[in-house]
Length: 264
Image (cartoon, rainbow, N blue to C red):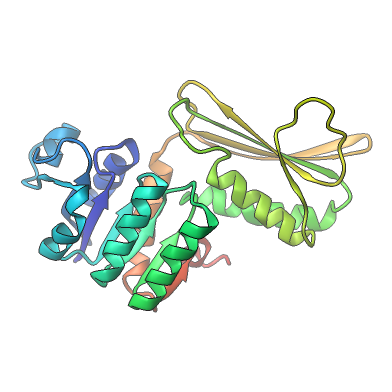
């Protein structure tokens, strides 16, 4: 039985992750950690019935992990909090699944250094859905054949999303740039902005959009669009739980969701 801790437990993604853990025959929730609802039963917070697991204070994460002894920590929070959570889990020799986005290069390096020095395994991905990971692969294949086309990335999310562009869009840009030997990135356009051979990235925020990502390849007389649309956050939660199962038997190191799916 894999023992699981969840940070950001009272958030939308945290709740969905917990639901997926609870229905898994091979997993057991041992701690729920957040900045809100501290001391309340997480099942009652989620309105799914009492689970006898009080919400732990994120500021005390080290002690909570030491007491609950999870095999893996699943983190969907915000970048500064996630860095602290990764550091605490690494010190406790706890495997990690990190779905938080918006990290700076320095934060990413700090996490990877802690993970590698502690000898744990971690899956860090801006998107855990199976479809998005296939989407990234399709972009690489298209870019190889449409290298002279103009490329634009358009992403749309709900009005509560804090970081922009999305981690998924940033990863798409990285995949495309790497495939094409390196491209400049432009984040939106304003005023006089003649197009060169850069990749444009545009972020839309509104309503309750779960997550839409479109990559436009525009040539003379035609265009191709490759799109992924998330209808529910459940796709992300299921992927994260699948990654949590996988990472507990993986060799120490930092992995991507493509490693979990065997499509890298």
